[in-house]
Length: 192
Image (cartoon, rainbow, N blue to C red; front, side, top):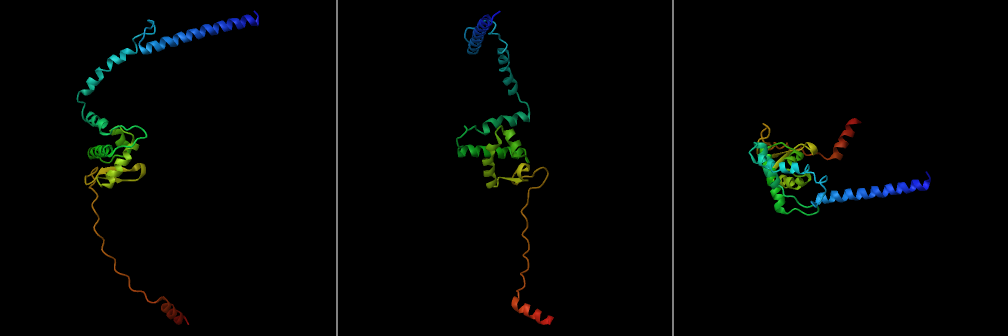
């Protein structure tokens, strides 16, 4: 076999392979768009799970206890905002109310736990938490990643709320100092 014959057969094989790939790609696109497709590409295997999805929400609609009650308000409590846009004051206030309500029933949680419970990114909770801290609606204990938040004035984890400290007794006023130069002169005279 000469190199010309080999090249001819390779080019024939490549062109047949290209046509088969194009045909398979066209069938896949038609199947995805719901157009007329060969029986092999229109297998109902992917559609079977879709038929089961309507049954799942009906099961979830049944009361499943306190965990379901906490999950339901979270999706509507914090509205989603497109990236690059500012949240309205109403959105921030709504987020603050949701955070405060969550902390009332779950005291001592950190930002990550609050964000997970409310179904929001933790970075979206920074401004509402700062507003709540500024209004003294909530208080915090700890620093950095160990920070835990509590609703102000409530008992947390068996600990009483922080009471204001009693005013300290005033320290006695210091005695008036004598003239430093005169004191130094008297000390120098005694040494002689």
